[in-house]
Image (cartoon, rainbow, N blue to C red; front, side, top):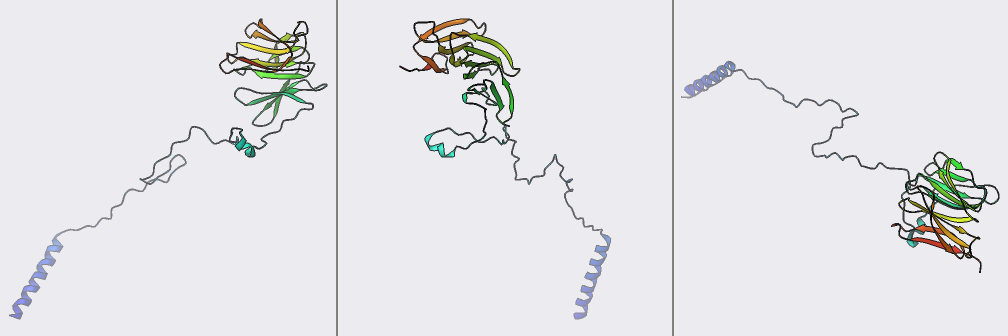
Length: 241
């Protein structure tokens, strides 16, 4: 009996070996193709990552601007210092804030100095006044600069080229100037000794430089500004009673 079991086991092994030899087997190691190394224009991200689109405004070295209020006074720092040889009487920025105009004078420096704000480099000066420059203002489109002086003139400049576009004459010194928000008129305030009142505001058309209106006042108009909607013109007067 044991002999028969042994012979059956031997036959099973022999049969299995024959069947294995008659079949062909192969083993393959499968892998995904290797991706090419990333280039400067290509960055490989994990499948769960999301690319962040570029921002619309690139970072700048320009300081963050803050509103000047009682609670922000301690945050104010000096960004740039611009110097004149004599007293500074008037300041004005271009509408885009890239150029600063400064003028004044005491006895001789009556030029209007222009600086590039970002670099602090002086980019030019406008020479033509023979007395203290009390006020300066850029036009809303940034193309013109108007200045008023103790020499009794208001001058309008193409500040980029340095050309004098117009010189307006007055009876006495003029101390304030302002363009209307639409740029259609220019207001000039100053002394007017030829009238029974001693000062006036003159309004001119910027297309023809012809006078449109004269408003008599009692004393010198030392500061003046249009409201943003152009409906109001506010002047500050000063005098000795």
